[in-house]
Length: 344
Image 1 (tube, rainbow, N blue to C red):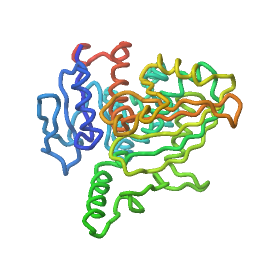
Image 2: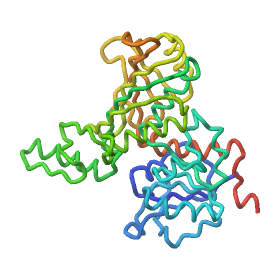
Image 3: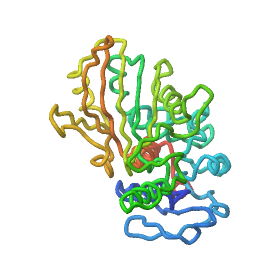
Image 4: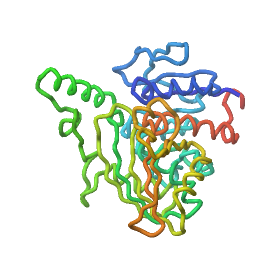
């Protein structure tokens, strides 16, 4: 069976990554349609050895399309995802618009693939926040083994999580520093080159940012509502891949060696943990890779049943595009979605 797939936001960082991953993983497609806003009509994007010209979202008919990979932001998704779903096309949405809707499953296939069956209520499935996706992939097998009660996570998030303009700003600012030109900040509230910014998304009344709140709410929905979590999210001058320092408290005892063995067998996880210089993964090495890497697993001596670990993943892939394609594969492999042409 082959599926007709449309990608909304095909010219963006994540949209282009979705096209690449569809081709890499040989997802069975009868046709791939690239969709974008009016300013990108006619723009060309690559899909395998093919070149696709972007078509206008406003005039596209989804009635014969099986899957829509939505990567155009929350405002577009709020308007279009229900309309697309009403035409019988399943939307896999990468924005925050539907993540906490009780009628929309929030899916990370290695963690809660069974919940994907709930898509029939609205024909929408939500992708989690990029920082949440890699975190729950690492937490799930440990939670199954010893029951997590509390998580404290500090993130070190790359600029690609804020889009192409953010990547361009880091490049431009870095160049300006080297040639002694004025450094201009447009995308970020402060300079990002050779700096850290302890703010991602807007501030909320309690002093946390919306990014930090997302990690709390989404982890509870995906993994376990009883888990207590607090996050500090920091933007760092890295182009691709998010890193996280994670402190975990468990209800039951678990050693670092036990955790290491569990994670080595866990789906989507690669453990690189040698206690020597360079015996860990950095964001540079994770870029372009599918795995969630875990390093520096050790026991936390300040609490009972505590572990500390380092977690790194390509935010454009596992944090966004790859996870969306994996969700589509779940629908296909579990026979939850029949291609319209096959059904006809």
